[in-house]
Image (cartoon, rainbow, N blue to C red; front, side, top):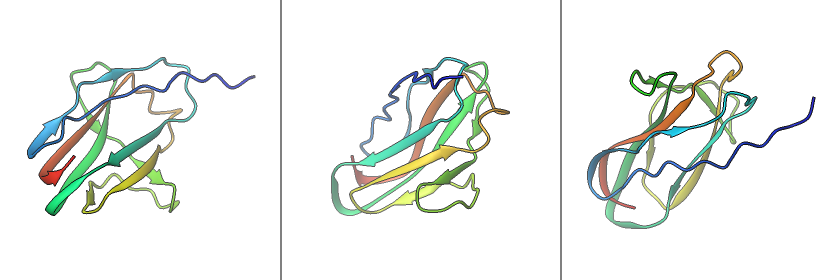
Length: 114
C-alpha cells in the first residue's frame, strides 16, 4: 500500500479580535494521518488567542479533535493558548477510528493576534 497525499487543505480563521470560527474544509476519506498547523504571524500589545481544531462527519455536528503535538506524545483535546508569534503542529490522534470528513478551527479570547 502506498502513501496518498490529499492536501494540503486550508481553513483560515479570520483573526482580528474576539471569537471566530473558520469555514469548514472537506477532505477525502482515505487518510491515515492528519496534521493541523496553527500559525500566529503578527501580534500587537498584550496579545493572546485561545484556539482548537474540530472535526465533523456531517459538517453540522462538531467534536474537539484529540491530538498530540510535535513536541509531546501526550494525548490532549484541550484548547491551546498563544501569546507570541508561533507555529504549532498538531497530529490528530487515532485518525483511523475518527474518520472526520470536515475540519475547522475555532478561536476565542483573541486580542491583538493575526
